[in-house]
Image: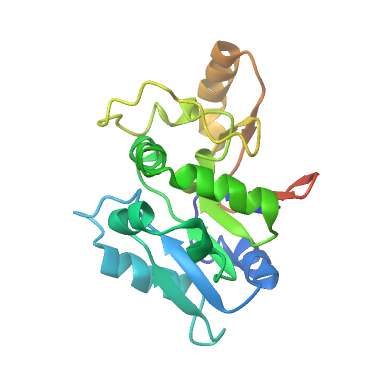
Length: 202
C-alpha cells in the first residue's frame, strides 16, 4: 500500500509531497481524477493543465490521463493497473464519495491499495474519502447530493482535517468531541503517508 493524503495546497507548498509521489511512481503514466471539482469554476481541461504544471510533467516526462465521471463508471479494475500512480484532486467531498460509491470505483481503489504498491495521492476531498469518515467536510462543502452515510473508505481509519490553520483549532476540537475521536490536522503543506503498515505525518 502506498497512500498519500495531502492537505490540499498547491505549489510551492506541495513541492515536497509532489516529489514523494513522483519518487514512488511505478512508471511515467499517471491517472488524474478531478471529479470532485466545480467544473463551472474550473473546467476539466483547466484542471489537467494545472496538474501538468503542478507535477512539471514535461520536465519529468510524465504522461497524464484524465478520467471524469463516465470513465469511473465504465473502466474496470484492470484498467488501473497500467498506471504508475493515481492522483485524486479536491473539490466537493460529498459529491466525490457519492460518485465513487455509485460507480463502485471506491471498491476498485481499495482493492488496488490492498493488492499493489501503486501510489495513490488524494488531495483535500481526495484525501478525506480514504479516511474513517468525511464529517470534517461539513463546515466547508455543501452536501447537495444528500449523502446520508458519511463513512469513508477507511483505508486510513482515522479522521483528518484538511486545509488546517491555527484559527480552526476550536472547530476541530468541537468535531473531535462530537466524533469521540482524535482528528489528525493536515496543513496545506503537510501530508500523511500510509506505506504498508507504517504511517508517517510530514
